[in-house]
Structure formats: C-alpha cells, structure tokens
Amino acid sequence: MDYQALAELLFPDVTDTPEMLEARYPARDLPEGAVVTRMAPSPTGFVHLGNLVMGLTAERMAHQSGGVLFLRVEDTDAKREVPGAVEVLINTLKHYGIQFDEGATIDGDSGNYGPYRQSTRAAIYHVYAKKLVSQGQAYPCFCTEEELTAMREKQEAAKETTGYYGAYAVWRDRPMEDIQAQLEAGHPWVLRFRSTGSIENQSKYDDLVKGKLTITENNVDHVLLKSDGIPTYHFAHAVDDHLMRTTHVVRGDEWMATLPFHIQLFKALGFRLPKYAHIGPLMKMDGTSKRKLSKRKDPELALTFYKAEGFPVKAVYEYIMTILNSNFEDWRRANPNADATAFPFSPKKLNPAGSLFDYAKLVDVSKNVISRMDAETVYSLLLEWAKEFDPDFGARLEADPDYAKRILAIGRGGRKPRKDLATWKEAKPYMGFFYDEYLEAPVFDEKFSKATIRTVLEKFLASYDPADDSAVWFDKVKAITAEIGFTTDMKAYKADPDAFPGTVADVSTYLRQAVTGKTNSPDLYTVMQILGKDRTVARIRAVLAGL
Ligand code: GLU
Image 1 (cartoon, helix red, strand yellow):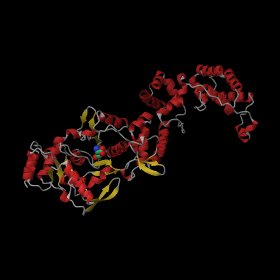
Image 2 (cartoon, protein in one colour):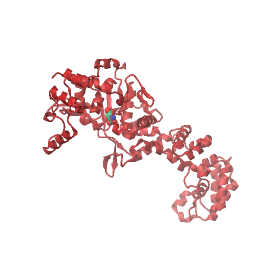
Image 3 (cartoon, helix red, strand yellow):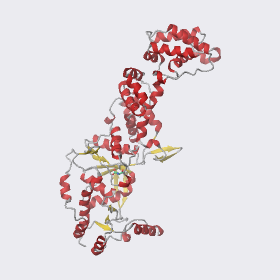
Image 4 (cartoon, protein in one colour):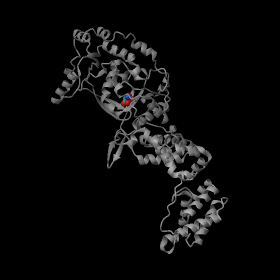
C-alpha cells in the first residue's frame, strides 16, 4: 500500500506540515518545573462543581509552579452545543476567581497557542491526520452505522469484547482500489487509528492522583476524525495538548478507560506524553452510603446554586480546598488571615476515589470566611448579591450605605467574631428588622400578661437615654426587672423556676421583640444604638399602641 498516495487522496487540500505547526507553536520559555495546564470544558451551558474542582486543581498546579493556565473550549459536538454557553462558562469561571493566563475569552482568543476553540482548529487536526495516514498509522473506514451495529450485536452474542479491533477491523488492510471506489461513490468515511497494540501487553503508569496503575495496551482502532472531518476527543486532546505545550492534564476519571489509547496515540504522533491527574467524581452521603452527585437529584451540583444562595466565592473556594487537600483546614487555622493561594496545594493529596461533598461543612466554612471579613467587604458582596437576587433589599442597602455597614459591623473584628451568616441569602432574615419596611409585628409568648409587657415597655421609655453606655443601659433593664417583681438572679431562677413570675431575660425579650419583632437578634443595646433614639422609641410606642 502506498500510504503517501492514500494521504494525498484523503487530504488533498492539506498543504501545511507538522514541521510548520511545530514552528508556529514553539516550546514555551518557562522555568524548569513550571506546569502548563488547562481547563478544557465542553460548553453545554451547565457548569458544575466538578468543573470548579478540576479548575482549581489545574489553577493551583499552574500558578503555584510559575506556569500557565489556559482555557480551551471543546466545542466539537455541535449537537450538545447550547447558544451562549461559552459566555456562561467563561463568566462562571471568572466569578469563581479562576484567572486564565491565555485562551478563549468572550471577545475571542488571547495567547500565542490558539485558536483555543476546537471548532476552529479543523485545519490543524487534518495536518496530523494526514501525517498518520502517510505513515500507515491511520486509515479510512467506510462502515455504515448498520454494519457497526450488526458487528456489535454479533460480538455481544458471542460474549466477546465489543469494538473495532482484530478481525473486526474490516477496513484496516483494504486495498487502495476499494477505498478509491468508495470515495468515488461519495460514501462517508471516518478516519481510524491503526492500533498495533495487544491486550496481552501490560505496563505501569503513575497518575498524579490515582497513583500507580497497570495499563493494558489498546488494540482498538478508535476513530480519530468523524465523517464530517471533526476530531474525536482523543485526537483533539493529543494534537491540542501537544501544540499548546501542555505539561499536565487535569481531567475527570471517566477518561481513564481511554488512557491506554491516548498513550499510544501520543507515541504514534511523536508527541511527548503529558502527566495526568485523573480526578474522581464528587460524592455525597445518601443515608449511610456514598454516591456520585447527580445533576438530576442534587441542585448543589450546579455552580449557579452557590451564586443564588449567596455563598461568597471565597467560601466556595476554601471549601473546595478543604475537600481536595485534607491538611488545608489545619493550615487555615494556623494562618487565619493568609491568602488561600499561600497554601501549598498538592494534587497527590486528592482522594483517588473522589472527594466527599458535605453541605453542612460548606456552611461551616462559609460562616468562618464571612466572620473574618470586614464590614466594608461584607457590604459590597452582599449588595452585589442583593442587586441580582433581591433587588428590593439591594435598594435599601444602597440607599444608606453607612447605616448598612454599621449593622454589618456588629460582632466583627476581635478574636472571636460572630458567625451569624453563611450566605447572603440569610442576611435579610438576620438584619431585615433594621429596615421599617421589613419589620414584623412581635408575637409575645402567651404565658406573659399584656399588662406586664406594657409596664416594662413604658418604664423603659421613661428611663431610656441613648447616651447611656451598655452597662448603664443594662442596669436600667435590671431595675425595671426588680420593679415588676421579676428576678435578675438567673441561677436562683434555674434552681427553682416556679418561685419567680419571670426574669431579666424575659424583660429583655419583651424589649427585643418590641424593637426587632423577633426573639433573637444581635446585642440589643447595639441594635438600639444603630437604630437611633427616634426609631427605637417609635417602634416601642407602636407596639404599646397595639397591646
Ligand atoms: N472536554 C472534556 C471534558 O469536558 C475535557 C477533558 C480534558 O480536560 O481533557 O470532559
């Protein structure tokens, strides 16, 4: 067989050579040990937590080593393509702080190793396809869908491994005349890899996450180019990651099964194999067993979920770090204020079987993260969230920034900051009462008489002076307690509750409910200071009028 002639026959328009491409995309000028890696998502319109897990792993590996992170859009599957999906993808990754050094952007490409959208790289793939054909390492296959189905059914019936291999690879060694006849008849063809591997052969491979693996050689003649000339994932992966000078591939472990083929393909193409980090799926506990997070069952798989709930990006980031590297939490405790990027991340610490996702833990991490922010930061992040997801609340926050910041400053700073909020969505239930529009009427416990509550509120108004410090303020509350025959001795009360009609805690609750509408709130003295005298007094009067 004259492979050169076959290559010309199949790719008459390809005039570029691999050498030209090698020269166009030279080796990167980076220091020893610098990792060049990428995110290579398919734009399906759905960006999930798994994308972020892989993205952050890749990002850390690249930037921690002084290397490069780029974004390649794998848009070769037109059937799955959703309009606007690339934009959603890029914006979502950006929202989560994944900074690409080069690659696809909303306004096109940036970087010297593009184009970065696979749909625009057909000419490049064809150069290498032609090379493989000319070396006898790839050939056209004219099998129809029906023929392939019939073949598979036969293999299944005979309990054989399914696939296009061995004697089943019917176009592997067909004479030129047969190929010419098919082409002349205008029959569609795919380009297949000519595998010289045998499943008898095994070798060792060391994956960055999975550790030592035993690889069984591939003997299947996989498809490289589909009948429309578009490459399969496998072929595009080899060509792109070679020409883009990727040193490390971080990807989902669903690609492990075809790793033997990828190893073979890189070799056939004369490319140096990158290092692989195959990431396991995200798991969650379902009752007592673990299962993969599912798009259908688990809303928390979608990244839009975290944005809508109002988890700060930083919280999601830190949470992912805690599930990827189990020593992150200890590091964070020892370095409470350090930037998370100072943490020495290692792909080797990832759980090979997949990380366990735990919502309660995320909430916990997020509370810590928010508690460490200053009021200014909290204000701007909350406002950004509210403008999109609760515009009415957003407008109120924006109408008086100083007021909002004073509220948000409650319990911040110091060694033990309060942990009131895990998400921005929780902010309105937490602080809404500061705004008259969101204030709810109090519902007093029925065990207390309205007359007692009225007396307390009236006495408070009579003695209230906003110039008091918190100690004086509380002395006055205690004085009222004594005047109505309630106790301030909580110990004595606890020992014998029936001996007392009520306590200072009840008196505080009446006041709290009158001023905030709720039985729980941040420190009431501080609340009154922020509300100011007029608003505090007006609220108590309004409650009195309704009693
Ligand atoms: N488009 C592939 C995916 O989304 C990329 C895998 C890779 O990173 O190589 O699974």
